[in-house]
Amino acid sequence: MDEDESLRRYGLRPSAGDLERIRELLETRTEMERRRQGDGDTELLKLSCVQLFNAGALGDVLPIWRAEESSWDAHGSIDVQLLCGAGLAETKEHLAAASSEDASAALAYLLSCEAAGDFVGFSVASQARWYARYYLG
Image 1 (tube, rainbow, N blue to C red):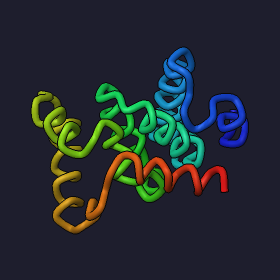
Image 2 (image 1 turned 180 degrees about the vertical axis):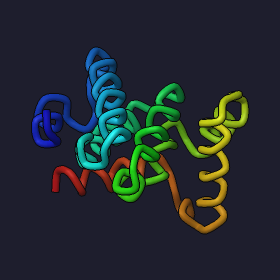
Image 3 (image 1 turned 60 degrees about the vertical axis):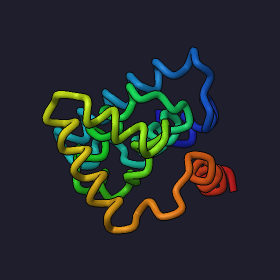
Image 4 (image 1 turned 90 degrees about the vertical axis):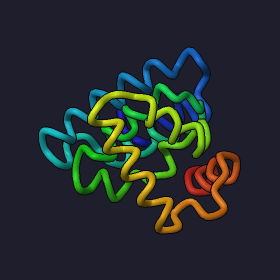
């Protein structure tokens, strides 16, 4: 599956029944990208993260983080805001309550990006509109 097929099949706001397939796709592609940069298709990784962002589930924060950190290209392609589909404050609380190295690293990065101004004017709705314009024109 490539980015165009995923967009046609699932759209930007997948149905609840399709979310598990997108999560599996993200996990598989993240592992491929981690093994060798370029193998995971960073554009498909990013779209999968956007689709999960639009679902707004806190359980998707760490899989999105792992996708972002899977390679240098993925890190540059997957926006930090995609971690925050449930909201910035909610995501920070979720990561602070988690007890894993991934959660600690994601929270530290999120806080540094927030301090750098990457979340000025951020809202889930405005970010979702931006991605809709990006993907759907």
